[in-house]
Length: 397
Length: 209
Image 1 (cartoon, rainbow over the protein chains, first blue to last red):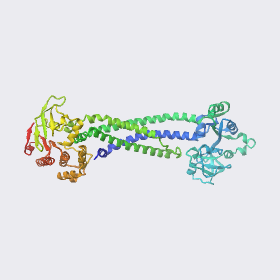
Image 2: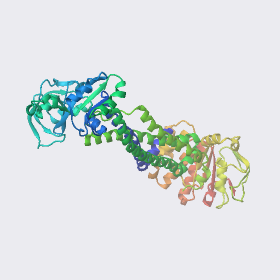
Image 3: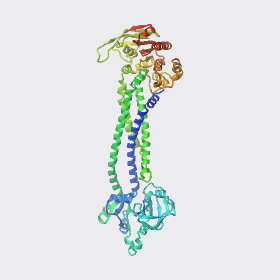
Image 4: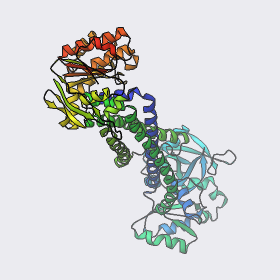
């Protein structure tokens, strides 16, 4: 017989109450950890895709829209720009790489990006099967696209105009799959990559405008990486002031977006803390109630020779068992809940959705709960020390 | 051996002062303390057990003045040397009969001897209920468990508070005999405090409060 055993038996004897305590605590932990996990995942998705892109040049409009559409591929483009104008910008000595992209078509909802061979290096995407597109009408599929659509090397398909799946504006030129990228856990996983000429050919730039075809060729945007930080200081201002193009800095724009969404995170965090406060009160009440309800047993243990410290230990063990189970359950619920949620809505296309939370995050939540338990246990020291055994045992019924 | 001298006690916020007679019991001597309700029988028993501190006077058990012990030492002294039988026999509901007895020995810092527990349970007719939870026991079984909890650790003094008040004549006799037997086996003093006149014929050494 040990104090631990007695505590375990006590917990077993009040299962309903214990389950409610564990569940409410696990729920609040799930919200606290979940919101941190969501924040981290959101940040990861953003930073992971903008690492190699310092500036985006596109048509005038909303800079955030330009970044979202050209970098994260989750919005409509602001318009098209002349390829020749974009090339002039890429010739600047401050530019390390300038990758043109052109899009506006899709296949079953997956965007088709016309670009250069450098595009895949932006995302460090490597070929899993086949080869890069060497001539027009050849495409390489992102990992997720190939997986979802079940397309194999040599398969052909017809693209549709626009960024949403539709059967009304289907192009007549078939595209052939010549390669599939390995999973990169980046936006390229859900793109269909081809060369710029394919996009132009599909849209009949060459055939209809033979005379000045080269002059009127358009792209959607230009993804630029600078050689030095000097580029950040001069290039955006220069482009925005001296041309009819728009330059946007992805990191800056996405930071702004993160600030806006941060308000939502803050609100959810506050709700989580309120629930946590409620469950903390439940923990304290359960410990205090235990002292009151079990006062006869605690007094009985005192007549057996138990010290105050032993009784306190018994109470603390019970609290810690509940908290530990709640913590483990909270972590499982957080991971499981988010995984289920993301799979259900397919937000990030299964790209490493669940970013491992840092040890510090767990430590913070664990520390918070630990503090509540310690405080609750400290608050019941007084009733235990001041327990009047004689009165309790005289009035036992 | 237990000895008291000039014990008085008064509850806070109450004017009445209880005065108790001096007692002196040698090893294995028994005592019946009779008295009507409200004369302070339970208060006297709690003073003897060190559950209350006297306003005046002292309680000596085997040359130890229990009133001069610190709280912690008194708890341990009580746990090791005194066995208490309560009117409403209480045991810990979440534990089984066996676990209650093991807990009794554990808190009084004694070796948990399962054979000794088994022997006592056999003697008290509780062996088959060894693994039962407390709420599965009848009132009579609970009373016997109360006695087992009071004697399992071989105390020097067994203090019983109204152990027969809710029992019929036959069971009253059985319980007192059991207490006497256990006191002999433990070489302990037995002090029974009751208003139940039926016990008078079973215990010879009597004082009236």
